[in-house]
Length: 112
Length: 113
Image (cartoon, rainbow over all chains, first blue to last red; front, side, top):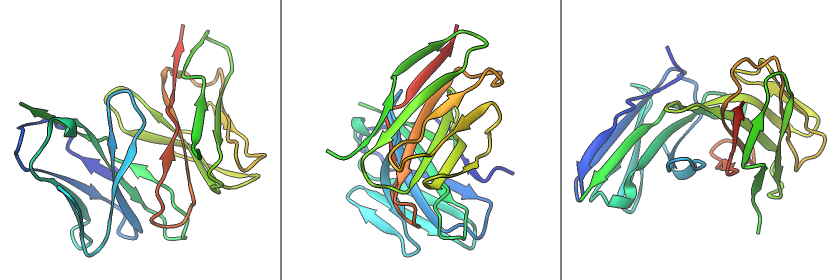
């Protein structure tokens, strides 16, 4: 089983739609969780960290479910500019050091 | 401005040659990482370093080597032992602690010709 698994998509949605991605992780001792965004042929950039209590940043909401070992990203009112690949990132170490393990990414295409 | 810089952006290598990819950061971060990304794939960890003069193998270290002689520099050498080196290479750095953001360089596209 992969350490971090994502549905590769693509998810094709119209502008204004709400879309959600899930990501599962295998190591129950994983310490920290993130969503990164990667545009085509560019470097990944942090979208948001994922906290146990869940967190929201504008149209984006991230949730963590430790019992079922998954994190989720919800995007409301999708914009054309949201088209990108969304990478789920997990730190599986419990030593305090951040070793980042990336999922393969979920591709989102928002159409007019 | 603080940041992390990779060079060159594009690199062509002949089979059998070693090449070195540069990664420099001025964010004063302790941790640095090298990842490889193949088309349609996620990032796979090659090597990482928690502190100067120390580094550990990641999941796909075979055919690669690194050094960490200075805090700001973490060069990656792709050796001739790496059988399929054509890929997009990404260097990252972070403060190293839990929940700290990783910052990425713009990447180097290596092509074997």
